[in-house]
Length: 329
Image 1 (cartoon, rainbow, N blue to C red):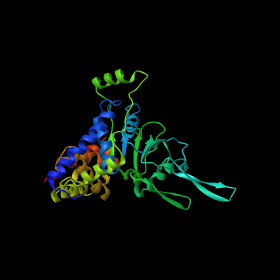
Image 2 (image 1 turned 90 degrees about the vertical axis):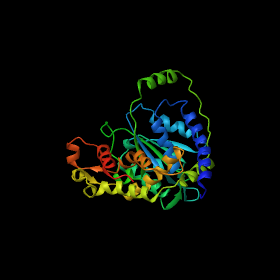
Image 3 (image 1 turned 180 degrees about the vertical axis):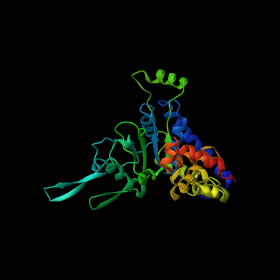
Image 4 (image 1 turned 30 degrees about the vertical axis):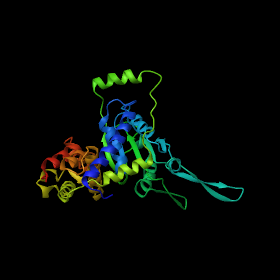
């Protein structure tokens, strides 16, 4: 999409109204959690998967279901459990004795929005079954490969890995998630509103206000947002600082980071920064957009050493240190 800045500004304002209608519908059942809702919309617009982590009862599943209801699009939910099998997710081939042939029964992964609920309660074999689908947008069942619908997004929730019955996700799979969002407890005023709204039988009905064509249009507009070469250099510097901290005056982090972020982080940070600018009503990306999305892009890609864990440090601490140190254009 190649348009003049004035035309792009008008397009952004128009598409922002569509997104506001989605927010209004979601707000019928979700109180607060605006950061999580904005990140869900960012993943939808940027065509990237999202991992949401938080304790049970913080409306993670409800928010994703509400977003799916506000969009006229196919939606499926899979509750991940320790006894889940890969075929329960992707589907399987069934033998028909009548004509001695096999037919393929597609699993719930053949949808537009897949809610992988409590993804880290299933063993690694099931979690790994998502890898091909998340990266290649296709699934192999037996000797047959089938393309997934477009758009296809995995919206996954997980409990903190310290909880009983959870398994850490494989690093290769975690890297496929564009964003990892941490959800915290609501404020007192929000919790009081939650009681008033949810402590009754009848809940508000969410109406679909956006269709697949609308999603495609929004993506085209967001993709047209301008990102300057200096901002691209800033993104690369931030990502390289996770791999070579000593080159950026961060020698103190060299013994704290086991592995830095992959090139996929640079790609996702540029895409997410453009969507952040779009959501802010701007036609261009600023370094602040990169700073806003950076922690959610990097927190699951920066792996710590035992020394960092012994010091009770988190990846968020080191990422903040990097953003505070790397020169801003």
